Image (cartoon, rainbow, N blue to C red):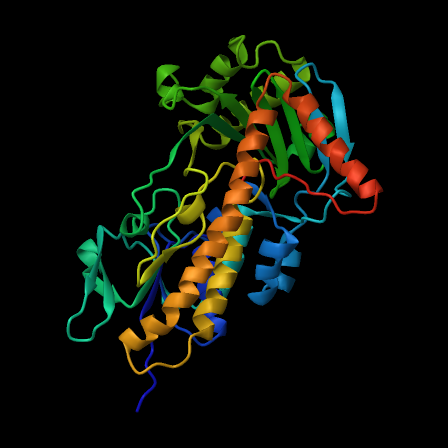
Length: 425
């Protein structure tokens, strides 16, 4: 009798979905990955993107188990682990060279590219939109069946579905009524490429890693990246979810948005000239590289801290779909990769079964344990993220962040390894 092979789908082709696909492939378990977007070109993946610092217990362990350690090592180096903290007056309050932790930085695009190159290409269905998803009991087989309506691509049914489809997950609707809510902060992102040649004074200001200038409830942060770039983030605290529209910034280029950012006393008008120059140059360069394009202004969202759902047969969530949080603890992608790693272990441990119903029955207790462990650790990290956001986007955020690092310096001096926060994810 042939061995039963469960039909497994992963919805979402981001880091968590791709990593899970790779981990299952290594274990001889076939899964189909559905991704709404088209496959990115190599040119697109080479562009500067946000940097992610991977942590030993999660992201780095996942890279090793995916068999991607050598490729990962080759992809890091654009951004060092150094950190510089300054206040709005331009006074440096903290510097380090990454000695507080070992958390190598990789560009988000580079991580995605590394995973895409190693996941079997025939398992990824690009340009596939799931319009609806439903869960049904199959009276003939006794199993639960999850069915996707794929629009022009027809329909597909599975024995087990993993929602790795991010903040606005469609799969989450099978399990939870929770919706992301606005966190109170927005990011304006702009990039300066070839900065060492064109603007060496900005390199001197930003350093080789991360710069955080904080105060008045706002922030200007930078990270070095591919193509000798500096990616600049202006973080704005505002209770208005639709701040860009209310401020008249919708449809405007980064160069036009610059006027509002630097002309408002509640934003960056009173900040040090060097920081204003950094932000202005980034906005101008962004528009030069992308003429006519709308500025990248994004409100940040989160799921309720401690988000839970009642376990249901045939479906689960990982990554942002399960525990969306803001980037102020640097845990988003790390938790997502940790989820993928643990779930791969769970699925590989299910014994052979005669049919879908028996396979689901064997999987059930393992999934309950997996979800409880995943959500418990995510709650701890989400609580940390909320504390960090409130601290660093405060009136005296730079001093608060400097004090934060001083605490870990003291811990390190006492013989323990510290914890470095990733500022953007």
